[in-house]
Length: 98
Length: 218
Image (cartoon, rainbow over all chains, first blue to last red; front, side):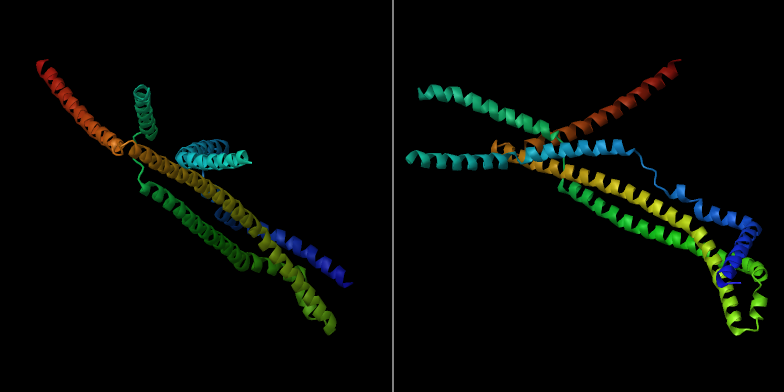
């Protein structure tokens, strides 16, 4: 018998023995599976809303935030506008002198 | 000419100033937004991240415990039962008694190799679902925490924006010479609300008295 044949024969025998062992210990195996896998659903977080609702809520708040920031930055934007307008006017007056 | 212009412009300026004040106070909704609100919300965000780290460590600990139970079962229960069978079916005694030392070593070595393969295959069969559960739970928990962090970030940014709007309104009110107008309105609302509560309690008492009188008259 070649070495490969010997290994194949041993693997077939081991497969049958493993199945017989599983059968003999089936109650203990079932108990182990219940113990190690039964808690997954209990541990999984249950979220209050679905993703679509959550995303919509966040988007509404973010839009309101952007609006508030726009209001808060109104003065600085007006100042920037004034400075820019003044610069343009100065350049324009320089062109007139030419 | 000049006095007429002044006469026309002055009421317009007053009207514009009043309009700005009204709009500013209305936009403020007369709500107080102390800086501590933003700080509290920001602190909550940091606490959520710390809790997420703690939760992930608990998940690691929980699944390590489950894997330990599987290892104990395989090593203490499954392996001995399996080996008792495989020693017979794999003819271990015959292999060990082989007169040719080379054949003996190969025969026993093959037997040991297949025995280890079978035991580790069983261990893997029991551990793989636990590993999958751990990955699924980590994804679900991370998703939940990421939602909390995102929501809290949005709320913190919004509170901060309200603070900025309030500061902007304060600047306008100050330029209009009525900086403490909002505080006065807020305080008046607080006082009125307290008085209203007292009035509600007084009405409730009166209602009780009327009910008792009604009972006595019957």
